[in-house]
Length: 305
Image 1 (cartoon, rainbow, N blue to C red):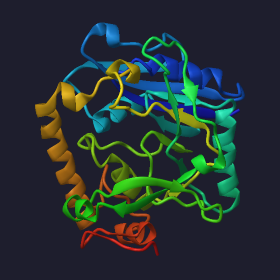
Image 2 (image 1 turned 135 degrees about the vertical axis):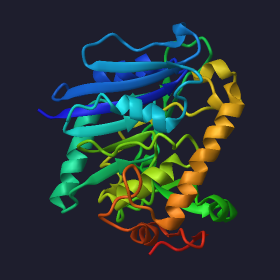
Image 3 (image 1 turned 90 degrees about the vertical axis):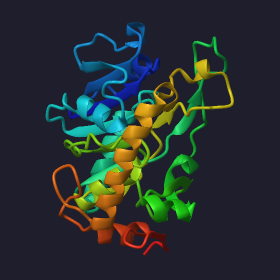
């Protein structure tokens, strides 16, 4: 029996409890699954974390501790040496036996000589068919849901911020390596990485990818799609999304934190800064850029080498 730590950071999200309960219900029962959760609320009624012995959580009242970096760090504090680590969003669902899928995927990669595989993908979609519905509908899972990540959109954005626009692309079955990560679906060995609390929102994924790669992780897809995600739909009633938007609630605080975050990302990715909660020293940023097709010095998106 192995142990899995599930790290969840949430902002005014009504899906926290359904996400946790579904992860437990859909697991194989063969492994211990523990949760570390941090939720940000405005009204106390928005705190919805199940009272279970394997769920540890912390809460903050907005605008305290808003932002992905601090939220994930506060959830990570409950990590207690579990064998495997899952970072997912607070609005997720899972396939039956998802824990066996991801553990076997890691073991399969390790047999191939990849010692620190980091599994990532953009999950398939689930949604509520109406505002009053108490059930969800899901995409039919096909191999095409396993996705690579392309950076070939908005090159000017990368030049000015060093944050590329990520796009999900169908995976090539001959190449299971992925250029970056999906923040809502990361599964790997051990304790993953400490989280820099200054990384607020935009750019989290390229930041995590660069940190993981330079800390010796190989970024790959799992053997199969194992989870779903409730993607925010701006074209429908906000209630159906089951969560609020932080930058709408607190635009001034969001802009302040976002500026700090972007400045840190730009400085780190142009200078290749190694240090605590920054880049690692098992590989260089240049090696990551060559792998991903990103020239961080000149701010150019190039062909994947």
